[in-house]
Image (cartoon, rainbow over all chains, first blue to last red; front, side):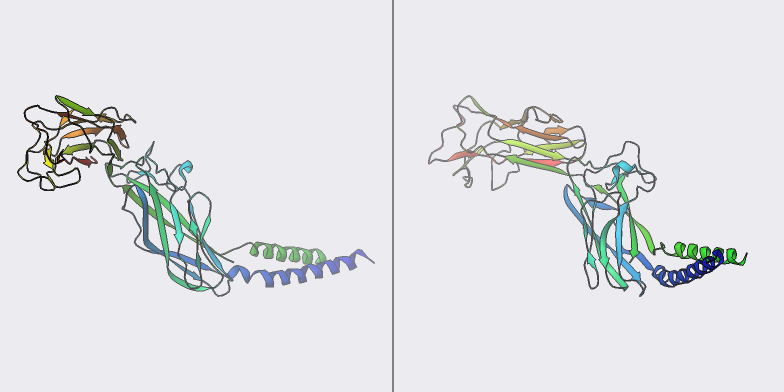
Length: 178
Length: 189
């Protein structure tokens, strides 16, 4: 058979396969997720030696019906010039920036998502620079006021800061669909 | 030419499909958590001194009671004070007759002539600086240990010294004892 014959068949096959791929794949990518935080963030958290807990923050997740599930993860992305070696731990902040030679809490922050109808909360016992799941679900819709609990252990070797400094950490929440 | 154009269109469609495939919906937000460690001090006393034989002219005990201080601030203090609790009547700092170590003070009873002296030498961790001998009284700021640096700790045996007089400190009848309750007050900074 001639080359022209084979070329013609290859072209037809390629076009058909491409159309099938487009039809099958494009709708999957259309699923969307929107996440937002509510409540009162602990920006003036008075902590004591021992175990400290804060549960004043909530999470709201909205997922389009064409998804099959979703997950929210947390990590410490070392924002605002925070040294990456301190990922997961609260670091001395002077109100405008992290100080040089900062005081750093000895224990990592813990983050826990609550469990409710349609979703399951998970415990991140030690926040770090890797994404870790805190809430997962295999359903879609809007899930409001998902409880978020922060826990921070302090020792007497974690000093009280003076001159209006504080310990700070920025947590990055990322939602994804499946 | 027509064939090449069709092949090009096919490849382009595959490329578009390939571009569409890896797109996954995601959304991100951030939360700031900030706070401070409250200025805190923890004072504890381990052991008791409840069967002390008071022999003239003076007795000292430096092994029965241990003072432990933990703080997360610089400039902390621990004071000793006679808070005059449980109906104690005689002058602050002096031991008063009681029916037993755990029992009540005897009303209108006698007391030791001299006040109890306390010191906290040589903290194990070194960061807490001992003040020296402190004569117990009702004063609130009678410091026995001071912490110079943040997060310093103290762990050391207390020394109690009691002057005993032949004439002013008689032997008590009915198995009564001389008693005093010492209060340790920590101030973080």
